Image 1 (tube, rainbow, N blue to C red):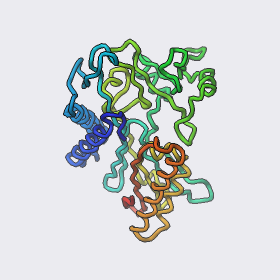
Image 2 (cartoon, one colour):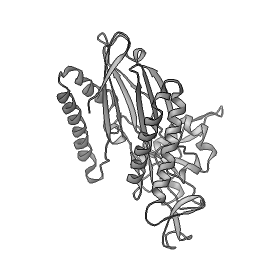
Image 3 (tube, rainbow, N blue to C red):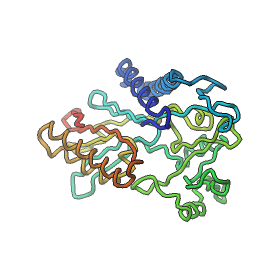
Length: 333
């Protein structure tokens, strides 16, 4: 899912193409080197984005970064860093037995397994979204960089009083969410990013940095080369799951891999109940129609909420059926 007004689409397409090339070449290695293969895949995509942006008209390199010429009234150097990056989630199903998921950013892969009794469907986000609200991401990298992690204030660049920091230390020196600032953010109308109540938070580069201040709403991404100097990383979080263990005694499951244009508009449980219904539909074409209808309903939901500023969306659904020794999976939409 690309972002950046000028080069977001370039970034996402370059990453997608590069990942497909890499995984076709190295898919068999996933059986024994899953994390290594996925890390290489994301590094390859990150480099491909740089090459694609550098190939765009008007782009040249300064200070080791792709830049574009601007008027000196906009930035005193006469050039500024070029935008462009992408989130990504990749799911590989190996031999019907191993599920490998790697991700950066706020795209997500979500698993749903129906219960065998009257209890609720089990829904699991395979890799937690890399939101700037994540304390572990702050502690491990961002706190060491010269960035602010702040609530997305409507007047963010109008003065330091609008920089409402997300984190503070408790009396024992441990990092935590600053509850007082959370209330200040509510009063300022900073708002929420998702239907699930996730808050809108950004990483903002230093005011006295080499280039103009930029914001990013994820802690990991491909591209976004200026932010990569300030604690953001292209390195994916990778998980490997035994499919039979994930499904337990259930004979069916669904995984949906989608961008935030989908997930921002749903509670996971609500969306996955809709998608699990594909198992009640006998014909493959009808299954695909059900999934397409779900994504179309999501698009309309976004249009109702956001009008012309609605986000784009990308998604794919995999339906699993259990067998004695391994699972079968069908891409249904």
